[in-house]
Image 1 (tube, helix red, strand yellow):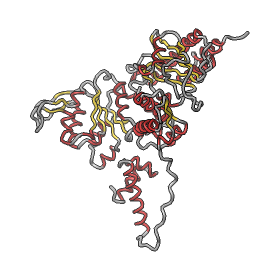
Image 2 (tube, rainbow, N blue to C red):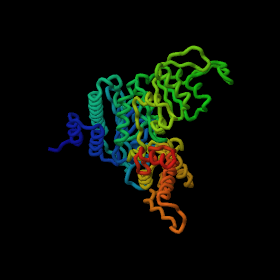
Image 3 (tube, rainbow, N blue to C red):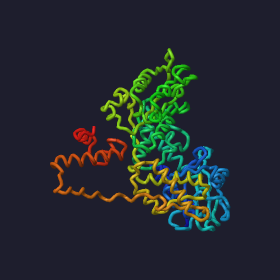
Image 4 (cartoon, one colour):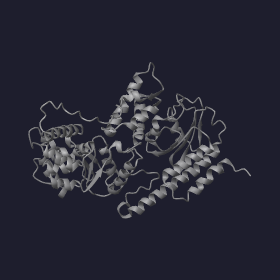
Length: 517
C-alpha cells in the first residue's frame, strides 16, 4: 500500500517532536522534509522580528543568507506571504523582486528565481514567520498542492514550538534563580537585545550565553576586546536583557571628550559654573537615571575624572559642577575598552580601585578571526544593507570572494568587514556599463591582500661591519620587533604578545629590560 507523500514527510517530524534535539537540527530536518515533499532548489525558515524577517535555517541558499535581515517594507513578496493566512504561489512573470535573487547556490550565472512558493506560520494564533520554497525552473510549482503545503505548515509550527519549549526549559534549568524573570515567553525570542549580533560560531554562542547570564543582574560589566569587534552592540544587548530595558540607555565615548569637558559631560553643571556655562546642563548620569550608562573607551578617562566616577559608582551620589548640593542617581554602568586596563593600572594611568569597581563582571568580545564562518553571516548582513542602499535587486558574493573573506585575518574586525563590503559594492557597480539588477562581488572587488608568506630569516649583517657584540645585536633586533608589533596593534600589549608568540607578562618584562617601558 502506497503512503501519501504528505504522510511520508510528516511521520519523521512527528516522531521528532518527542525527541530532545537542538533547535538547528529540528529546523534542518524540517526543511529537508519540505524539499522531499515539494522538490525545489532552495527552502528557508524565517522568523518574524518586528519589521523584519530573520532566517533561522536555510537549505540550498548561500551561507551569507543566514546573516541577512529582510525588512518587510523592502521585500513585497515576503510582505504578501504574511498578509495571507494560506500558502501563496507567485506567477513566474510576477514583477515583484524576489529576496533570494542571486542567492541560490550552484547555478552559476543563472541568478534570478523564477518560481516562488511560501506560507505563513502561526503560533498561538499569532504570526510567527514564514516558510519559503524557490526554484529556478519557472514551472516547478505549477502542479503544487497548496493544501498539502498548508498541512505541512501546521506541523512546522508545532516543530518550532517544540524547539522553543525545550530551549526555554533547558535555560531555566541552568539558571532558574538568576534568570527566571529575564526569560522571554514570546515565541521565538532571541537572547534579549541580541538581534543585531550575528553569528553561529562557538565563540559567539559563548558570548551570547554570558550576556544572558549577567544581563538580568545589576552587576557592573567591563567589556573588553579589540577595536571594531562590536562592544557597543554587546552593551545594548546587556541593557535589553536587564530589568532596565524600558529605561534609557545613554552612551558616552570617553575618547572623544576634551579633558576640560569630561566632568560636565558626566555630571553636568549649573549656569555660570565656568566660562561659557550659559545654561544649566544635565550630565550623562542624570540622563541615564533609572537606566544604563555605557562608557565607551573608559581607558581614556583622565585620572581626575576617574576619582569622581568612582565616588558615583560607590554611593550613587554626584555633584554637578558649580552646584552646592549632591543628587542621587540610580544608574547601572557598563564600560568598554580596547586597552589592557590591568597594565594601565600598573603604569599609573588608571586607578586600581576604579578598575576593580568596573570589572565586577569582565566580558570578552572575541575578534572576528576567532569566529570562523561567522564572517560570511556578517557579510550577508552588510550585503543586504548595501543592496537596499544602492537600490539593487540582488547583491551577492562569488565563491572566490567567500574564500577570500574566510582567509583574511581581519585586524579591524567587524568594522573592517562592514567598510570593505560597502567599498566593494560601489566598485562592482562602477565596473558595469549599465545598472544591473543583480550585482556579484568577486575577490577582485574586495582587494584583500593574500595571506602573508612565512617570515624569512633576518639576514645576518655583514661580519666585516662594526655591529658590536652579539648580545647588543640581539637586543636591537628584539627592540625593533617589539616596537613594530606595538605600533601595528595600537600599543595593545596583549595583541602584540599574541603576534610575537610570547606570553604577555614575558613580553612586558623583556620590554622593560630593553628600555621600551
